[in-house]
Image 1 (cartoon, one colour):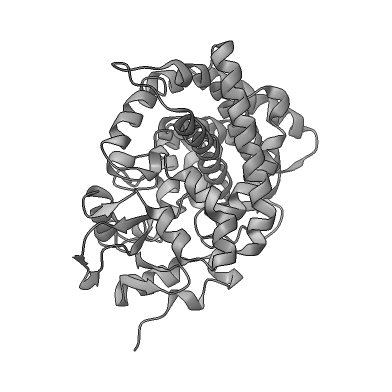
Image 2 (cartoon, helix red, strand yellow; image 1 turned 60 degrees about the vertical axis):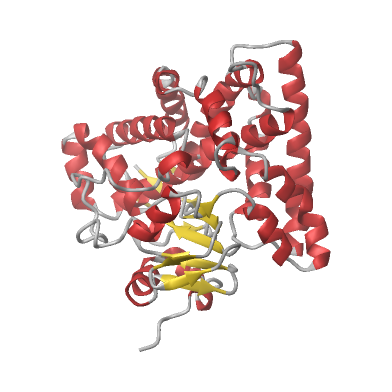
Amino acid sequence: MAPIALDDFLDKPEFYRDPYPVYHELRATDPVHWSDIMGSWVLTRYDDVVASMRDPSRFSSAGRHALSLDRLPEHVRKKAKPIYEHYAVGLIHTDPPDHTRMRALINKVFTVRAMESLRPRVQKIVDDLLDAAAAKGEMDIMAALAFPLPVAIISQILGIPEEDNDKFAYWNEGVNELTATGRTTEANLERGLPIFQHLRAYLRDLIEKRRRDPQDDLLSALVMVEDEGDRLSEEELITNYQTLITAGFETTMNLIGTGLLTMLRHPDQLAQLQADPSLTESAVEELLRYETPFQRNWRVAAQDTDLGGKRIERGQLVAQMLGAANRDPEVFPDPDRLDITRNSGRHIAFGYGIHFCIGAPLARIEADVAFRTLLRRFPALRLKHDQADWREEIVFRGLNSLMVEF
């Protein structure tokens, strides 16, 4: 039987509801698979994904956007150029030594200790959000908790004024039009580009305010941080700051939403967690593996290389399907079974190697507090509808809404 083609599924809603059967078949029959629509090799095996993350000399994070830009039709390319130039200088789109320099500077202020100190604040926000929903007997988890919690936290630590929090939904939707679908088209540029440009202007203005009047927030710290005379340039500040904003709530929002949906669809696991809340930390790791919030990353081949029996040529893109890798039966036995006691320590939901997610500790704290508090306060929590409202994006795996009753 001939291998299936991923391109045959990318426009089908059922794929986004459950992509894992397609990933399983690709992994078994064509694990290094070419996609014309994505313009890249698609990796679905854990070992191949990790190999491409481990070695920047073979698989580079630099130049990915320039390569993608060149593939676009000329009339689309001209409009998209500012976006691709924006990302080119950021932490996640560079290799050593630039990546090493920026990561060292950002690590000085984005520490595990600093994130852990936010736990009481996370708890207060969760309590307040659930107080607001408690009298209604039902809520949309995405709108009532999964979105506002990480927005409030990332706003606080990065120095976004509280009155601007409502802009996040608008910004996030606009940026996702450009980055989360896996395709840049004239249509999503028409909607997303003005929002993207507005966000850049807002960040530039906010950075200038912090230069003149530093506050007790991470933006001020990032503006002022220095190491042997080296600082982040203004373009590096803007790009990295925008990345921290998006990554700071996108992963957590999706983890809370898809994680709760998964638990409610597995009542045996839910009952086990309610009986023993000490399993919450383990459950969060299993949910990260089972429904990986950030599903697709990518690299560009820095040299001709062989992987999985295929010849990948220098300059070709490689799509790392993290969600597929985290369901690889060679690494995770019975991978489609949810087991909150599973040792999921090898999952790569936060990436691997030098680009491991800098915000992983914060995402884990927020999810831990959210799940513990939800299940304690609403022990009879249940789904209101059988069907979940999935976002049709290949980069992020998340929900538009999740109605629950209690």
